[in-house]
Image (cartoon, rainbow, N blue to C red; front, side, top):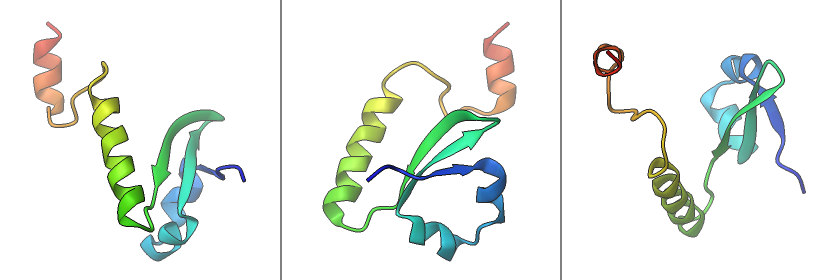
Length: 76
């Protein structure tokens, strides 16, 4: 079974209860992959997703805890 794809526009139209029903999906923007969303149904899946998030955050990219002003300042 493949992971369904949802455009960001479609996602914005969904209510939280409708998003939870999807379980997992890929978010697409202008035909390009943005991210994968996992709605865990078990503690094991939640823990596994959490561990993958930690791994993903350990690789380069913007720190989500840094505000836009701090990023602009750091880049100068």
